[in-house]
Length: 219
Image (cartoon, rainbow, N blue to C red; front, top):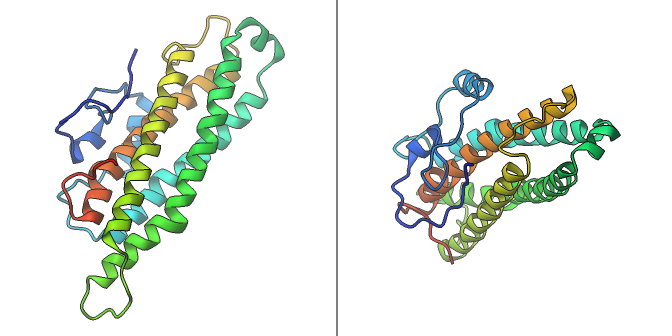
């Protein structure tokens, strides 16, 4: 069983984390569907990428936020169409349903907070670093506190992913699973894989670039 707890200290993970490693540096399972999707979208930018932070933020939103919203909507629909007989035969589905509800709520709120509050402040700070731009930047101390809060939320999301993986026995469909249940487990796995990439990119590429550090710390 693969777990994604990120309490291991001193892991040397930067841009390469986003090429198939969990935030703790452990290998994550790669599904053929996800590999093809990642290849179609191109490689994740790395920490050495010279692109402006504003462009990296656009990448996060266009690739990861849009995908996550689409996947959680699909998972919600798949859960709604599960036959009652499957629910009775597999009581673990009740736990999966509850865990996904928490994951969905926290993930959607987290992404909205980034898009409405944190990302615009990072963009303003980058613009203010240009001597020709008169707009005020963000206080770096406050920005660091906000990023630390986001990192803690990433940890919470990783814990929920671990619990869902455990509840689904590593996304292994039961022998008598209907098509909806098989699809549910497949899409849950795909969401996990992309969300880990998403989290790693923000933690080890985007936020360090925004704060001018190697890796943001936690409070």
